[in-house]
Image (cartoon, rainbow over all chains, first blue to last red):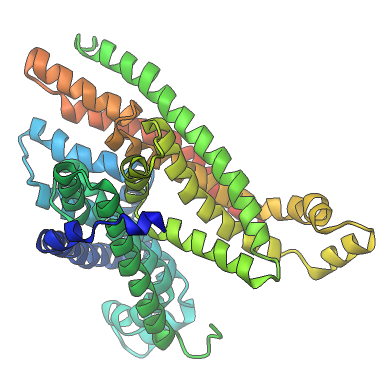
Length: 225
Length: 221
């Protein structure tokens, strides 16, 4: 209780605009990351599931590299390493590129598994009905496999949100970075970090509850889940 | 082919100091995660609701928070209330809190997959709750726990890099310091080669373990 009694709310109140701005930047990177990683995951996942030559192998290599190396190292390689090759990325560009590439690799696996879980005979039925192979994918494999992949891709999106916090290491002013900067000036580390943790937990818990509800509505008929 | 002059001292520093620190972080965190996680996961199967609720909260908090924020809270916020940790300790505690939450969830599933009859038979033989779990249920649940434990090891090894942010001289941080030193000494940071090397190093460690985890998953479950 003494902890809470000593909690300096004025610090929080005075810095609310800056923190709000940081939160918006976090959400900005997250939204780009979710959209980008979905696009990568859907296309490469489809290429993997349909064993499209060359693309499939390259996608597999990309997935293995991203999954078996720490994302913080990937961020450092993009931000500090690429300038050696003459490519200079801003912290913002690094942030969204890093989470998109990272999430894209995990989503490729999620969607590959989802598409492969669609029974073969559905695809054959689609082709027999005269749908083109692209049409069969869009009309049959995607709606069914996409929903099978939904729970695991949601976990990836939650991880993408959490990974945006790592951008503080390259000085991108997202929520964590803003909170740390305020703490560095005001010496109120306790207030700032407790607040930071509370914001992340409410964001992530709210998102989880919302998407679980959505997932329930989108669940394939006949599945007892 | 001979390597440029800068490579040898940098590689030696990163492997002898950095990799050793990474290994220490990983081993301590994985052991801590496994012990706390198995204990909490087993307790999560008891009937007493308040205990389950507390453990559930522990899991949701440490799984929900970005690991870097957990590490920041331990390292920067706790000193304000009189608890001070070294960077190494703060990183290890953060990793273990996060890892134990993962393992607790996996253990709950594994323990619940053991048929009721095993519990009943153990009770009939006179085992109490502790003996029943220690000698009958957990040894069987361990089979199912092996794949998640190996993937935890992979994830912990990768996440040890976050310790660099609070200044632990693990592989990534030794790479950082080498880049800074080379920039000052020669003007050329060689950042691409160094961070690329760090990436290759982690890949070489993680890839076989990921494969092992997938293999165990197929074999044991």
